[in-house]
Length: 310
Image 1: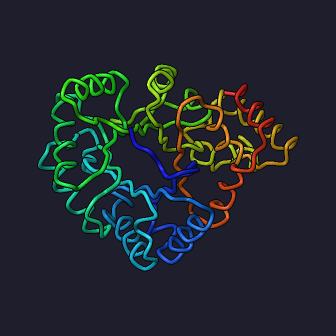
Image 2: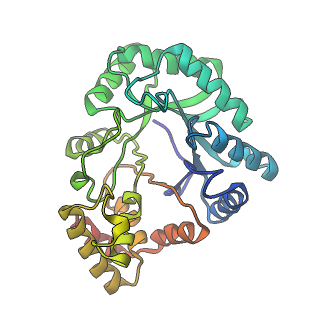
Image 3: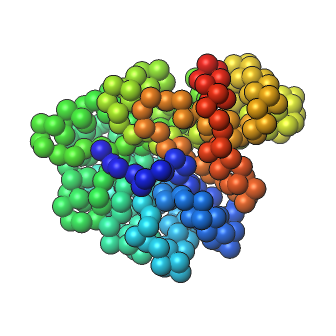
């Protein structure tokens, strides 16, 4: 399993780098993240749609400008389906090789620290996928590889295959997960995976690191507390459900009592887990990024209150 840099908690996502925030603001965010001790940058070959590779290029230019490549764990993903055919997996060795070569060039790195298979293809034997990952490791293209949007069944199969072959296997898991995730409206996009109770149990039993995306419920709780559940901008929000709104009420009460922002509390919830968790944060403004770091200041009593909430 992968060992992340010491004291790592928040992982800076870059899914919209180049659009919002623009490149100049993205540089400011990465500077701030670095100053606050952050050491993991996460991106993907398809970011930001439809400008494939722009996020990787911005990160690559920042790493070069700051001369800090060796200080960071670089995480990127390949094998995403075509944007006009989201139900068509593309995890062949040829497709992944195409993606990783472009990612290494865009990022300006010879070796990617953590390379994710972006969406599973359950028609392919998991041994084939791990073989590709091991091949990348042997070539020195990646240090570790992980699973993004894989079911627990497939993760278990992968662990068994890795043990049988003496391979490292998947070093981490990246599903959609957040407080109240089980109350979210059904996923509209195919091939995505939500962390459920079965997934949580698997992480507790194995200690496999979790790096959840949508870790703040796409900002829903902060928005609903600020705007109200009836605000027109939230009508179609995927987390606008009775269960999530009930949690929003609890978060507001705890925010009022503790003085911590709702956004900080949503992230601090991950500290209550009894397995390694490194939540991805996707920010569009410096203010949002600063607020995310307030989660590091949440006191133990409040964290205990959060553990009783979800």
